[in-house]
View 1 (cartoon, rainbow, N blue to C red):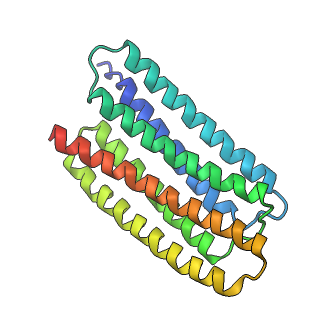
View 2: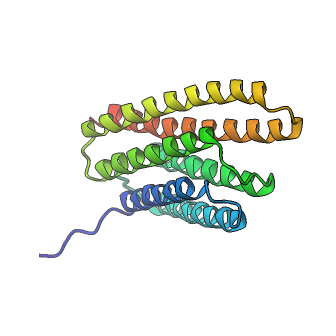
Length: 205
């Protein structure tokens, strides 16, 4: 018996989620080893971001030519856009290491990276459940994403306080503060994905 071909929208969303996981894993694994390869690190993260742009364009193209979609058109577009914001945040953070010549990731950057890595896996699990139309089961992962975003808020509060207490060089302070805030904003983008999934659950279950 022939297997039914997976819907192009669900397939592309899954590919996007899988790429976000790969990018978040790469980010977390490499930020503590940037002294010799920060340019490679930034370039690799850009490749992940460009791949996700391709998935976003695929969805837009398919929405323009498909009459019946598995979810509301706006929901599909908002979901892929919110996921794209996550990978954009990861890539933008990675580029700061290169542009600012920040070669030593402190404990707070490592904590942010781990929060983002865990968030990526929660997004991946939720998106694969969406493809299987197991909507109510997604809630476990949206709750977890909300919790991880709260952890990101707390890390930002702590690291900002420590930064102003310990760093005297104003240039270094500006660079680290901007990076901390960009990382925390990326955790917000992960929560945006959770909120979008909650809206889909509410409208379809």
